[in-house]
Length: 158
Image 1 (cartoon, rainbow, N blue to C red):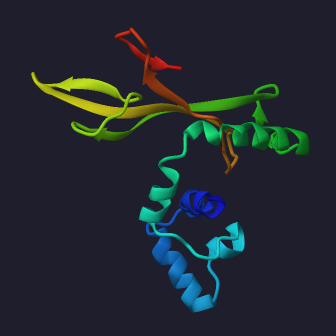
Image 2 (cartoon, rainbow, N blue to C red):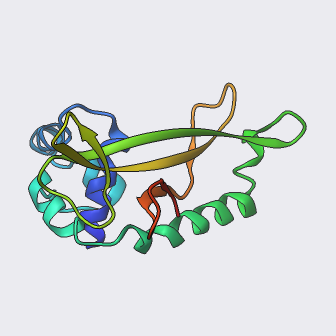
């Protein structure tokens, strides 16, 4: 499972349009890929394998990792370079939507009406990231998923 999670994270780190193709190219030409040297993933799974393994895992399983990373950055002084405006940290917020379907849905889906008789189901979240002017790195914070609340019409954050 660790290799599947690392392989899922790697495309965000590498910023390449076809991660798997690029890693296979590096492996063929140089004998090793970035995925092997940076993440320790020996056999790079395909997208479908990653989805099959990670989709059933509840997101809150990963939440402790966010607090651990922030604690390590704080203790090591890694956040000092990101402080500005009198020692404060800037947090960028971004709302995003993913998975949208008129057929496939779950109890955590938000929904909206399209026309008179169509309903779209979708997932949304609010993502927060520590950023700093002139700094080329960002630190993601734990996401907040927006889900319907019991007996409420309004769809809201937990």
